[in-house]
Length: 435
Image (tube, rainbow, N blue to C red; front, side):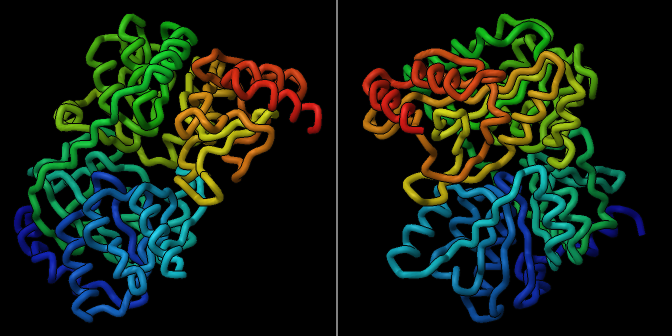
């Protein structure tokens, strides 16, 4: 059977493909842009119509296609979300669940780098559902914007169902999937979501300029999500020979690469190529990624492995947090007594950057939240420790920056109080004396 014939033999409707899913099983879906909308709609419809008792759904970072189908509140008694990174979708489910006296979402704490191992070793996956780019003449799809855990989960699940979308970019790197590995194929050609971030605030622009001042020519960059990292990228267009080894590829990073500031010449690994594990943004980003050999996609257990990150010199890791206590510990995932997001890959890159020769790990936040009424610099954290104080190096707010490495607890507290909003400094100093 040639590749085209094998493709046609496996091509089915979404409803036929989802009839293969068994009740009570463990199902995983591609994350973010790799959510397969037609498959998720057919799966939700089967549950709604009583054709499927229910199942456990495993994933990291949901978007609107899942929200409108398998993550509908009315289905959470039969589809049990097992989420490793909360977004506004899960937060809304949890809010409604609290009102109804139920827990509609199972949060699974895990580092992003451990997600492939969790799904391949700790969970007995029955089915994996994912969007892929179209097959080439040699029978190969690619995982497009979502390598992350997909390449591992696809090969560890008993059944693999792919949704082919011509709008999904074809990427280079370790992202290939052969038609012979697939059990069922569905076609659904819909534009990928446009996820432009909001404009940075004046405080974030100040922080971005401070961070940019800490980045030298030849640095190897990891950028987190949101308006602040995008603002940092905009400040770096005059740098030379930057490298990219990042968990998330964003429009800001793509623009920085296109500016000529990124060459990847000084990297020890994958010289000449920008490494990433998943991408989110806009059509310009997806077009930039498509068939671009300078962009190298790898599974997250490689990209986020601190030992692998540290093979490159001068790694600069930039991530956001919600709270920093006076010892330097960071809570980046918990707000007002509730899980807000997840640990993601923050600690992976903090440790990778710290272990890199000449590396810098930067944690950034505005000094206040809730319209200036709450300080993000606090005596003690009100949530879990996402990044331990032993690992935190540089902290930046709009009031400056401090390198905590090698400092005593007293010195750390003094440095962090100087980064707090002036309205809260006296209270923090008083609290320091009681710690």
